[in-house]
Length: 75
Image 1 (cartoon, rainbow, N blue to C red):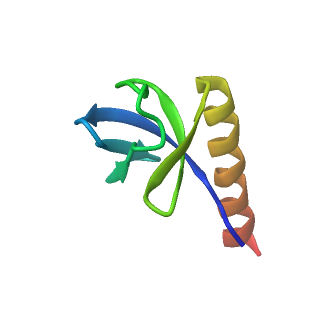
Image 2: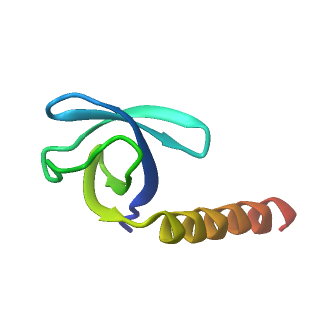
């Protein structure tokens, strides 16, 4: 199963960005999204930002992930 996770870009260099995902930061490649800027939301898969998304979509998806975590914890 492949899963892309919404992340917010908090820093960037030419080809790499630091993104924040639910309070965790990590480095990802932005070679596929050269116009991505600090403050943008992107989908991250396997260390690559693969698609720009709007903030509302990112927040909805992260809320669903949180619900799944809670469901798994309660099961």
